[in-house]
Image 1 (cartoon, helix red, strand yellow):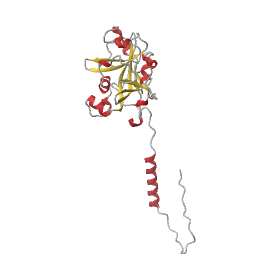
Image 2 (cartoon, helix red, strand yellow; image 1 turned 60 degrees about the horizontal axis):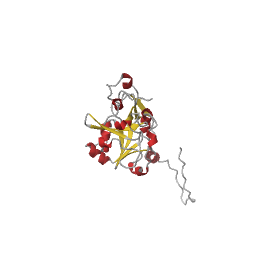
Image 3 (spheres, helix red, strand yellow; image 1 turned 135 degrees about the vertical axis):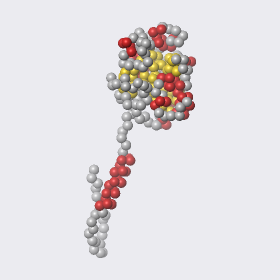
Image 4 (cartoon, helix red, strand yellow; image 1 turned 120 degrees about the vertical axis):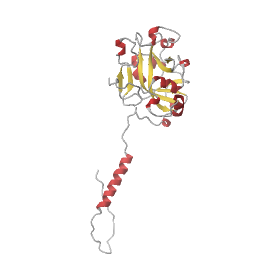
Length: 260
């Protein structure tokens, strides 16, 4: 926009005023300063899901805990709906950025073994936690899906840290804020400080480990699940892995993810 030139009101001069040439350098300096001032005030609009408000502006104690009914749907429908939601335990809050669906009659699902002491929570009602050890080392958090007796769940693969970074770093044993802090299912369980004793914990009840409502991502990616080469070919190639598009907080491999 062209700047309006300002004129100074003056009375009749007592002495003649000689015409002078405009100070070109001065005008150029003022234009440069104006552009710098505008550029510092105008910032590009950031995507809501990738650039969340600072943790201090989010009152998680007042956020809505997802109701029991939210979880009692097919795991394939629940998985993408969990993206953008928040996991909260104590002062730690994580935003879910990547998940995998595991369904009944799925040769990669733990439910294929039937009800055992380990897998019993998978057959419970949707909205409970299913926590197991992978290779006896990594604590894997799953959200049970569907109705009681179905045997389905959604694995939480990756998250982004929202609050409690000091606690997360201490539990993980890493002083970093890079995606490597939380880009894997075992890292999520460690950051939350949970064990297999949390299996069957209701995520829709206040206290302990909670699942809170959060923003729906604008775009998502889909791809085959990770590390299930033992499953049947149709289940290995099934696009049952979901992630928020554009975020760095995703586990490897990333090159198998694409828009739906």
